[in-house]
Amino acid sequence: MEDVRSESVFPLAVDLDGTLIATDLLWEGLFLLLRRNPLLMFLVPFWALNGPARLKHEIARRIELDPATLPYREEVLERLQLEQAAGRRIVLATGTPKKFADAIAEHLGLFDAVLATEGLHNLTSKNKVDALEGIYGKGGFDYLGNSRHDLAIFDAARTAIVVAPDRHAARWQVAQGCELIVTPKATWITLVRMLRVHQWLKNGLIFVPLFLAHEYFNLPAIGRCVLAFISFSAAASAIYIINDFFDLALDRQHKTKRNRPFASGMLTIPFGLACSGLLLLLSVLTATALPPLFWLVLSTYLVTTTAYSVSIKRMLLIDVLTLAGLYTIRVLAGQAATDFDPSFWLLAFSIFFFLSLALVKRYVELRSTVADAKQRIAGRGYRPEDQEVIAQAGMGAGFAAVVVLALYIDSSAVFEQYNHPYMVWPLAPLILYMIMRIWILARRDEMHDDPVVFILTDWRSQLMVGIGLALLVIAVMLP
Image 1 (cartoon, rainbow, N blue to C red):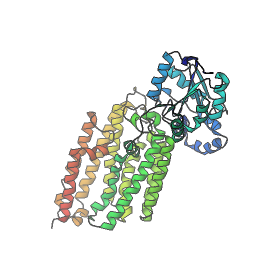
Image 2: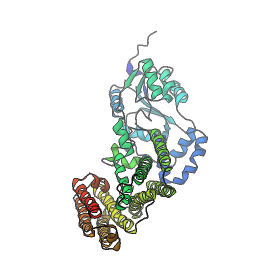
Image 3: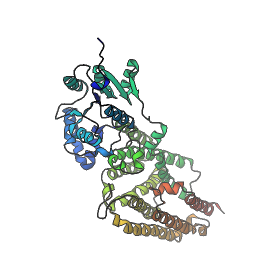
Image 4: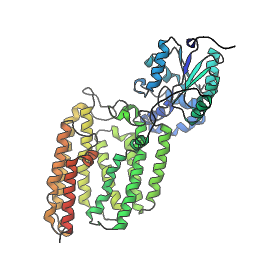
């Protein structure tokens, strides 16, 4: 006999991970846990061996999540608000630990009841069916979900609603012809943003030793530099992805970083992990065609940038010194790839120049972040009152780079390498102009949050760089 009860009589059960929010709290909680204590990574496999419920329990009891920062699906929230206004009972039914589910339910104020994983009882798939049927009876509820873990619940529900489905749920939805809530999908632009392709521009520093050695037409050396560039770019993108996982909560509090692919939920953490692994494999395979010394430089870069992502970025001053070192490592990678002897002058200039840029980066963050006096800005070791010290140190480091450049220009090395050494002298005022302009724009709040990207995209900076390169070429090539 046909069930003629009104729609509002049937409660609507709603899944959490991937459905109400565009992320998975198990993965988010794991990276939040490792960020706070990286040594716990050695315990995670043992927890996982005892089942997903044990893993969820151990993570949940050690961390706190801020429900206000999570990437909620607006389409689902609007639907739930309409259902609530119509007087329908709404139930949050999730495999997420109850601690997290309760916090989210309290924040949203949409749910009449919460069913979630408690202790070692994992409320997913068949367990969720049993819990819902035990309260509302067979076919006594509607269900809104998204993944293969929800298939059993879809079958048990009176009516199923699918949102942002994985391939298993998508096939089920097409076969059953049930309602689909359409959500924004990732595009190739999303993937480009995930890879941070614009950051690859920094790896152009690999070509600096080749250029300064005047090997403009040395095709084997150019080829090795190209391979080194690919290897470093792949490695950098892999680490950027991992860095995004550790910074999810902080990124969601930032006015622009909240739109990053993982912070916004456009891409999933498991997908990012797979991409990161493939990128690291590409980096290693490319490095096999380069000299052994390049392996040492690449390994140093990977270890240092990983340590920076996990903890160093929160250390006062150590972070900017590390950033300056990471820029300089790219120069060393170019020397290692080409077997050119390292230049003391180049390394000394690089350290001071990039230290200035790293301090600009922190200065801009201090200027743009709202924080009370005596309070550190989110995820950093700095406080608002540090602005002036950072600015003075940054400008001082920039001037020191110019002094090193001036000493180099007046050294015997320049007279030995260039036919017209006087053509090299304008480099000093050009670099001085760039540094002073960057700091003036930073004080005016007109600076990009990454000064290296700013230099590579700002036409005035490009003009200064172009003039400098032209002068070096002329100084060498002009008879």
